[in-house]
Amino acid sequence: MIKVSDQAKQKAIQLMTEDGFNAETDYIRVGVKSGGCSGLEYVLKFDKEKNDSDQVFEDNGIKIIVDKKSILYLAGTTLEYSGGLNGKGFVFNNPNAARTCGCGESFSL
Image (cartoon, rainbow, N blue to C red; front, side, top):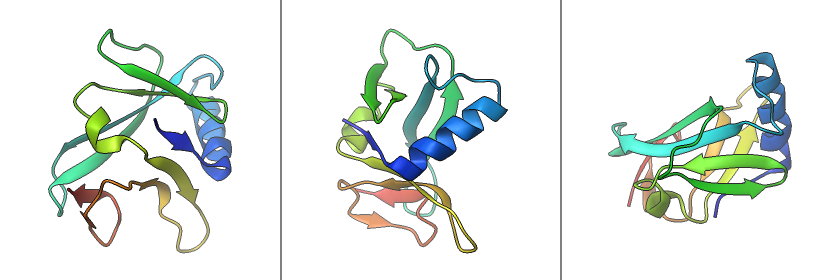
């Protein structure tokens, strides 16, 4: 399961609306791909459609889809948002990550 903090929910709804998506019917697609300074990096984008192999989660009113290969890496993760002067934007709080890079955009197990 993937959770969504209140701040991440508010920012996601704002950005989805600005990009022509509807937070009530569309999805946030999250995943993992090879890369980054720690070996794996997070992927986040908005999507109107889900694939048959996607798993759907809903938390805090936000629908999230995760592809089958990424689900093991992201189980228990909370999507958060950090704003302000030193804010990083969307942040993945992943309990499975053994090591993360300084920017928080990549990790390793």
